[in-house]
Image (tube, rainbow, N blue to C red; front, side):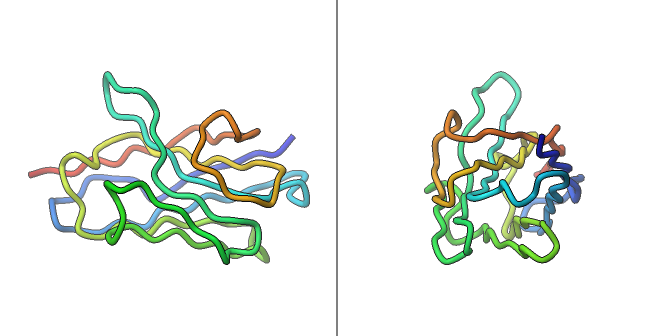
Length: 124
């Protein structure tokens, strides 16, 4: 069973930056594509960014495109989400997800493993 642990969340003012990290452990050779999703209070979980096994292919939600950057370091079993120009509407719990296929995907149901989430709060 793959385990994912997120870190890097916190409170930041609008316009600021945060860098989230997600470290995978146990059966890491099973991990292919990875993604970041987020869930705001009272809303459904939504896609933010995804990256293929090799890191060559990335996808972004329109709401974060140009502000967020996803990357990964397979030697460290870690995926990152650099978030710049943060807005109050980015406030949410951010979840890391992984799937066994090497292909990146934006669909929640395509992911096999999930982290517990890290809170990001952006004040205006």
